[in-house]
Image (cartoon, rainbow, N blue to C red):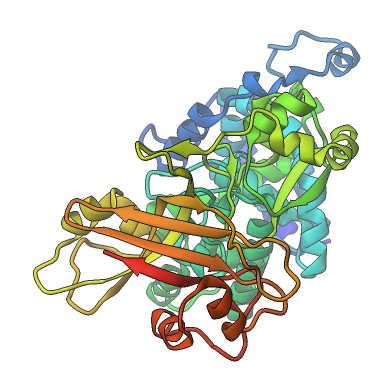
Length: 504
C-alpha cells in the first residue's frame, strides 16, 4: 500500500467528522467548485461544440442500458469515501499519483454530470483509439494511462483545434509539431494523423520524463511547457511534487492534472455512473491501411466503394480538403476492411470514377491544380500582407508555415509558402530517351498580380542521365544545367522534376 493513502484516509476521516449534517457524507456530485471562467471548463466547452457524432453514425449501446436496470438519464450519487476508495485502487495500479481531493472531485462531477453527453461519446471513441494508443505507448515503455490524456486534450477528436492553434488528438502547436516532423501544408496536417501524432506525443513524454522523473510533473510540463514548470518549482522553494508547486503554476495547468485524474476514474467506472457509450461505426480492428501514390478525391472513393464522406473523414482526418494530394510521397488511406479488397481489385476504376477532369484554358491547353512548395526570399520594402497577396494566401497561413510569432519580416528571410498552382499537361516528347515508350512533360504556371512565370518540367525516369534528357527534349546540356543549378547532375533522383524550359 502506498504511504500517501494513510494520510488521505486520515484527512478523509477528519473531514467527515467535521460535518454537522450526518447525510453530508453522501455529498451529491452535482456540487462543483470549478469557476465559470476556468480555462479547463472553457476548453471542454469548445470540444463539445467541435464534436459531430451524429454525422458519423454513432449510437447508444442498448444492451448496456438493459443491464444497468435504470433510466439512461439518471445520475447515480456516491459518497466521497466510495470515490476515494475507487481512486486509491486505481492509484495502486499506475505510476501516476492519482490523489483524491476537492479539485479532483469537481472534475469528476464535470465529466460525470455536466458533460455527461461528451463523456459518453468519448467512451465510444475509446474503442477506436485506445488500442492504437496502448500499442504505441508500449513501444516507448510509457505508462498506458497516458491514453487518458488525449481525452483531456481533445476529447478524442483528431481535428480539434484550440483558440491558440493547438491541433489534433494531442493538441500540438505548430512549432512543437514541426520539431517532431508533424508537417502542415494546405492539403494535410500531420498533427491530425492519429498514429504519427501519438508517436510524437510519446517522444515528447519521454523527453519530459528525462527532465523531471515524475509523471505528474511530466503532465504539467506537457500542458504549459518545461519553462513554466521550472519557474513554479523555483517559486515553491524547489519542491518536486505537483500539488506542492500547484499554486505557482499557470491557471490553466492547475486544472490539468485534476482533469487527468478525473478521466482515469470515469473511464474506469463508466457503468457505475450510468455512462452509455456512443459507439462509432468502427473499432480499431475494423479498418486497414493502403498506400496511395496518386491524387485521389474522397468523392471518388465514396462513390466507387459505397462509403460515406463522413466515414472517410473519420478514418482519414489528416486530409484537410477531402483530397489525397500528389506530393511526391506515399500517402496512407484508411478504409473499412471489407472495402480494402474492393479498392485493390478496382484501383484503376476508382481513380477514374467521377475523376476531376483536366480543365482547359481559353487557348485549349489542359491543366490540373497541384500544390507546390514555394520559397520566397524577402526583399527590401516587402511586408507580409504584400507577400500573402502576391501568392493568394493569408498572412496567418504564412505565419503558421514559417513558425512566425509576429508579422514582422526582414530582407533576406526565406519564407516557405504552399500554393495551389496550375500544372499544364503537354504532349509527351516525340523522341523518348533510352527505352522509355513515353515520358510526360508538364508545364507549371504561377500567375501573380505583377508577373507571369511559366516553366516546363520533366519528370525524371529510372536510368535517365542529363544527356539523355537534353537530347530527348531538344535543349542543350549547358542550358539544362543552367536551368537546374541546384540539381546534382551526376545523381538524378527518379520521380523528381527538373526544368527544361522557362519563359517570362
